[in-house]
Length: 417
Image (cartoon, rainbow, N blue to C red):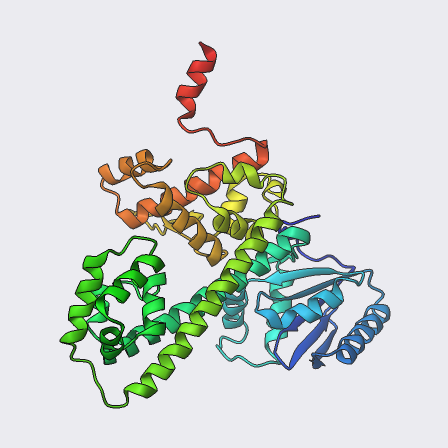
């Protein structure tokens, strides 16, 4: 299975160029032959009949111009291209994708106008394809495909949970503002338990100090003692929370707490499935051998990359993550290095949080991180550098099939002795 995009060279005299401007309800297609003959942009319905009509039209054009190879391209887009993509994968053709930034710049050259229409865009995509600026389409398969979907589902669930937690915190502040000074995190088990069972000052007082203390100690597994319960009880006595419309707010708080608990259970289910699919990836134990790099990070990276072993050089996978460096220099001015960010944002996010975990006082990247800070490098820039370093180490571990060894130089000297 090929899991790495390859740049497609300039089309030859036997290549039929087919471009698609992807939409939700319908797409717009366009055909071009090497001799300049073309089929004007036409609508393609996003359904089975529409796909079959598109394929028949393509075959007629190919036969009429006696062409042997078909190159179908479209801009990298969201989910709307996936049904057509899977339909075309079964056909004798080559699929490529176009960087939207490339088509945007070529569009400016075509007619010197930023004009954007469904009938202009397919022609621009075809121009980019003929210049040779397209990449083969990579569709993850097997466990890697499942990990990608699971990671994306988890990201969406976490985003929804964050939004609901913000709503919950706002409502709690209205009826019991002092609650947030005692229980710092509403998202904690204790915070959710209290907001779900006794979200108002009156409910806390009705529960009683002894019962409140027992519940908090039980839910927090001993982390919250009697003193914290006393603080909350005293805050309830002198609360300045709003009393008008309180019952309606309590009803909404109960609904939000229920939603958060459902999302938490769903996230746990996703992570359990991630663990099972990771077991099907032969080199996943090698990546997990890095202390501070957990299951979520490894599962997400494999889902985004597809297969680390399909990459032959480190710059290829670094570019996929958008962590490749560039500078803007002119004449005597020498620009600073920046990461391109022209890659997968989720890869960068996972690596960045992995870097935060590994630069802690006992982390595997603590020493190199401190060296960067001592040289005057800003903390964020140092974390990005550590992200690049982590990706390089993971690539080497997957390529060589080896386990990560901390303080490798000392270990090698001991073996030599």
